[in-house]
Image (tube, rainbow, N blue to C red; front, side, top):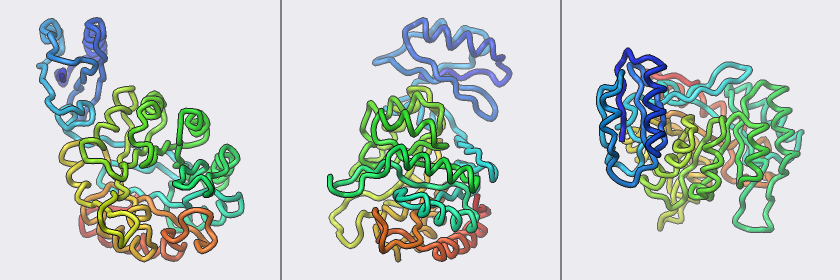
Length: 342
């Protein structure tokens, strides 16, 4: 159910409606828009009898929302959600007309490695640095990340270079630490349906970058985002990183068709990770161009100065000079579409 408020509704009227909704045993989610505020109602398993709400001051109407994902849907919020990440180098905006860039290594291996790559990332004009302190791996014998020492290295990167930090939490325990160090909390593909982790991330005040599971449908992807928003975190960025198909030519099959599909159904921004989407370095640049052309709100790419000796995902990590080429090429495509690199 969605309660649509008048454009001139006061904060007191909005608060009164929220209090009435919650007194009925439901949860109220006020979502400000450019013209008016809408209040989403969750927690109901059937028809909501809220005739008393419709008669309250400031209320225009109550509208049923038929989709299983309520808060994520454009039925609740027609205009795009803007997620703004503040860095020392300026704000990075997801969901606007610009293309937001995130780059860095798959895993933080050492302070020297992180600083070397961060220097190249900043020089390329990228303001968000990605790097995993925790690495969920298919094999228990693979490098699992440095843990909190890796988070401290990421904090040092932010201090030294002014870059915002995007890093993954793999469980509730690690999220408590990631929340202290990161600017954006990443939920990886393997955890897209880790519902307890989603609920915990939903209670965080940090923006969340949610990756699509490797076998997730579009509805399952959006329902995972609904978990985050239902807990009160409305700063959610979706990420397409490829799905598993019958094809074995690339590591995954990058589903670029999901970008306009998400943008049709949801107001949340969506970015593309061509590194995990292909697992092949020589595919990252062409698919980055395609992602921008299809309307992606940003790119998440892996960069390493010595990928042949990387402890994680070296074959899909591009070199610093390739990152510069990528920026040049996607900027040209963005210009044609009236967009810019952010």
